[in-house]
Image (tube, rainbow, N blue to C red; front, side):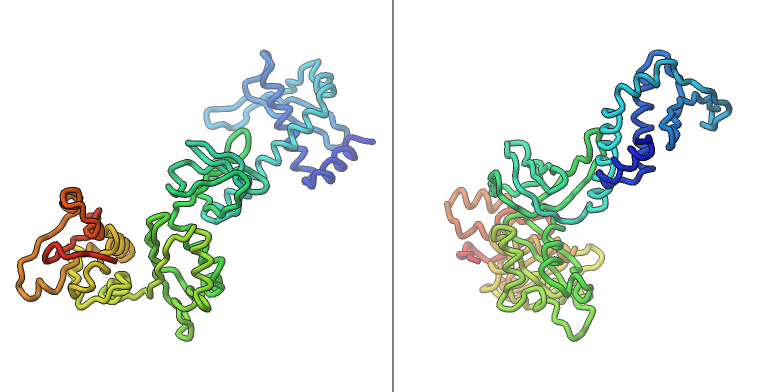
Length: 366
């Protein structure tokens, strides 16, 4: 069998293009040559595709990297060494092609989700088998209370694909906000087709997400499309997120309407905007205050992230001229520790985008 026939047979067996295999083989030969103490500083390998004859071409380059001279730099014993290691050289070439193909495949999938099977778990990372490759999920990309077990199958978001000598290093996440968006894209055909669009998303992984959606077709209800019949679509998303709560709200170009929707399920009396400071004063009835704030300030905090406005929540007692006390997160933590009142946790840890005012130490429940 000729060299070309043997090369063609191997390329066919490995489902690799002949010229790609030939180029990878040349790279492998060049690496072997560069290890010699007498190797030219700059060189390239030429392989005759018919006979398999190998030549090392020494190069002289100018300051700009252009070739100004070249010569036959093939060592006298190089052909014998190559023949002795022919099989290993071909295997190395095929491995190099596989690594490159794998990198290109997964690099093009950055920003996508993939299913993986948990292979290994420790206190620094979780290793997943994602089919053709392994993926690494660092501790920082894992939801705190999720405890993956070997053999468990989960969906993850591909954050980054790095090129290494051993193949692609794939970093995945369970905490990335885009994981929620991609799960909805899978579950909701109207999103995949472009009829419904996710305009904004805010997430506190493992606890709660808010998703703002809009329709590009007046006949399609964007919220209803995402919820699905009897909540089936959103339920599939929450199940994959281990029961993380997901609020789906209608997006609006009108910031007042958008803020009101973002603070659901609370009913908002009034929204006053200050465009210079990017802040919104939200007035609610006393009965709706705890609902607007949410447990540990979560509802208001997510609404602020979703809309991009700094939200100042006030009870309507302010409108009646009653004395108000602004409760910041640090003050709440102190007060809760002093009185041991769990009801005050509803406004704990309010972000800098959320200011809450209330009238007294009334019980706050969600």
